[in-house]
Length: 373
Image (cartoon, rainbow, N blue to C red):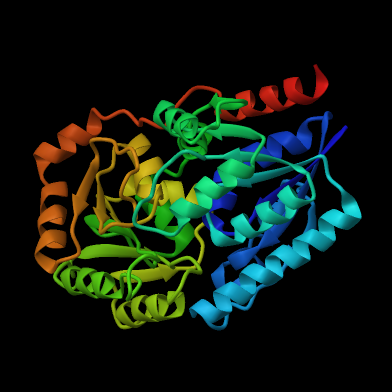
């Protein structure tokens, strides 16, 4: 039996990994252990304990970070602490494989600890580009340290090859697109409204705006402009999810909470959970912000995405994605385009470029062949 430590540090990558984790847990060839870090160790960002318990997933270790502050000094200290804590865990337990997804600094820290101890790394969603974020460098660095690569798109495979990574690179498709194809969403707005306790209006937006780590103000001016524009849409339902734990995240989330606190048409969610999040996405008219979810998952629902600013620059984008600069005029123009009947028709005919059949099943099959053939 092969022992796999699956590392997850945010609600976003946990939701992406969830179906894979459940299937690995049920497979008798593998002993799966979860290591949680980042925002997943704080109820401030939502509580996954019931979901983990329901699916009989075992948490081996929680690596706690300082989430009270969000400046560069604290992030660097969190980075160093993550390496040290994970190194101590690996030194004691010696798993056969570490499974990582994506590009966050917490994931990068854990990859360093595994790499130095000569523990194999399987990396999911490598080879993608987000030129507007530090995540791009973290992702590329993890890819260089990894031994097995599961990529979401042929272009990602080519990118890794250009980086000199040519062995054990497998095009399996995106986990987000796979998850959408497998989940039974709540189609009724009335029922979903009761579940998430939000009163949907005739038109609704799903909004996530994360800090932009390569910009001096972390993109806060961009968020201000988005809030300014959204004030005009007081007849629309505004559903916010909080930002991730990058530089200035407390300032970002405070801005969002303050905007919503006196509005009857707006609500902030720490964590909706995969089913409720996808159900909400399927019932809104636009996905707005700079989250990768608008590119990786929203196209599967044929929902237009207003992608604001530089954070996702370089990613492969479906025709459902409308890029907007950070100006008030640019954001408002993109929203107006996204709400037109013409663009709605375009979206309905769009295919998600990250979808491929049997993504999770193929990852498990490749892992079995790697270790048991």
